[in-house]
Length: 155
Image 1: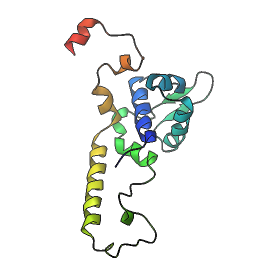
Image 2 (image 1 turned 180 degrees about the vertical axis):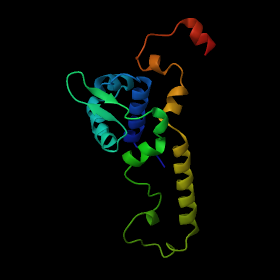
Image 3 (image 1 turned 90 degrees about the vertical axis):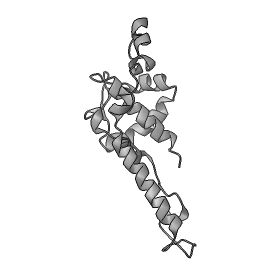
Image 4 (image 1 turned 60 degrees about the vertical axis):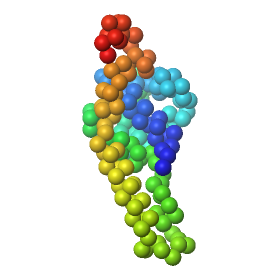
């Protein structure tokens, strides 16, 4: 299974907003930090906003922010909004299936267990976990100046 670029950058966008806590984040700044197009981020923003994972503020001084604390937004919350399908095999898809074993196949059961385990792990990790795992994230994203060398050596 491979997550889409949309999911990857959705997670990154929320990480940026979490690291920039207390301030509105602007799409051009997020795009510059990650080296991705603003248009791509605007495309991702719409489903995230609709799902309540980000909040937008319109106007000249507008931007994007998290609507709730980062420790309340899981990776699963993001993945279920940004991924179109979790069909790991033909038998996961709706519609007519050609396989005669579809109702009694061990592969189907194994893949379902694997997918459920994947979702359970994603539910255990929050945006806050990802941000706190990188103490220099604000510097790396261009949100603050480089920390003093003593802090870098201690980290």
